[in-house]
Image 1: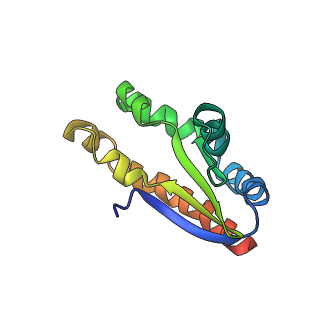
Image 2: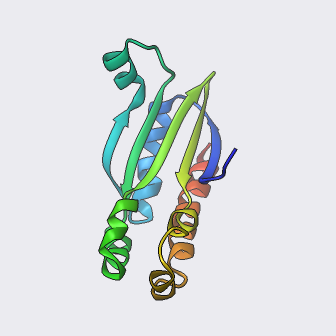
Image 3: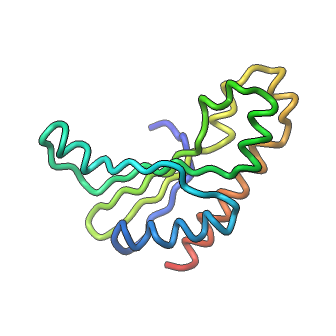
Length: 135
């Protein structure tokens, strides 16, 4: 399976973990712009029962501005997706890896943004580590 992100497993239910996740993301300057309740969408649109699964679109305005200033088309890679999946009393929290996402930009933009994906990744890893410590 391909590695698109960083993930941790936590005890608890999705809503409890989500609440804590929002706090640790906020501490790193991220807010959530979008929320997709995949379980609800699958039920409403397809009549399918699906596990508790949410996709959050997280954004740090300072990082977003820097990225968009380098290349406005980077908006296609934003916001940073965060996935919460609940399964048998555990919740997996995954955050897309900025280094993987930025690997698709052209060489000129990579040069202009040297070190940037790593900086964003460190911030997101810090949020995951803080969440893990709370568990």
